[in-house]
Figure 1 (cartoon, rainbow, N blue to C red):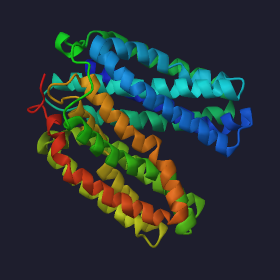
Figure 2 (cartoon, rainbow, N blue to C red; figure 1 turned 180 degrees about the vertical axis):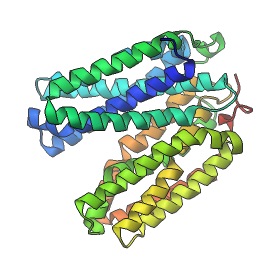
Figure 3 (tube, rainbow, N blue to C red; figure 1 turned 180 degrees about the horizontal axis):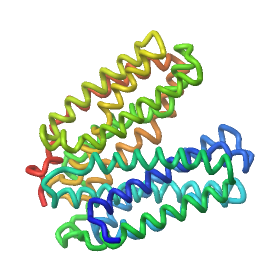
Length: 382
């Protein structure tokens, strides 16, 4: 079955998110099989993040030299098998190595598919990046639901084999169009160097300030409702549910909005909305008010990172892989590293204080919003 370039890159985002959702579903059983304590599981998650942060910059260099098509083809096939290696690890040490490889491949694939999306977006009259990230969110949701079912009625190994088979099937469907979607230009291959312009670093700050609140809501919103707002476990789950649902829906709606109003105005409106949502959540007196705040925050945060990535891939004078690798490394550190710090700060102050402070951090996105202007097609430089 022949598919188009936009569908092919969307499938890659779906696969990447599906792997993350599938991993999240099996963490408790993975820990039980290897008899890992909560602290060791935390270390495993840190190893995953470290693998991503280590490999992303190198992936940017490889993309600049060999093009997005080759790198996406190689990384998507490798990444599709990574959850299997984690699952089959017989002991703590091999599991640690598998987690590093898992994080490295997932992070590198993430960077490569974003670079491919930028390349495809340049050739189209309207943006596609937000909807691509919508497919990532959808993949995570499907992975979590399917994982919960398979792990309940089968086993860790069967779950891993099913996930791997589905991922490889989707990747193979996408490969022909990825191969024909173009490669790096010779001029881009020659510009493999550390960026000397301030612009990609500022875009990275925008991505960081957008990703930190997202990571905090994912990791700590339910605990905030239970511990500080005396909500039931059932009600607490709606905090992340409301946030993630609105994130996914608004990402699919984000491209038309950005196309109509432009990247800068869209980011400004989203930043203010996200900040207001977190402020409502942080100052909430009841769980239901906090859930409403997280829902509003999800609407606002949904398109901030995708637009930042589009802008990074179109920075003039730089190979897209180099600029995008810098932005993603800075931005994803907000999801992979910052939430652990927020947990520590919450013990000293409170989660209410943390979410209120993050509302202020989102105002920095509004202040630096002009740096995403290159996300718009009329500003992009081929």
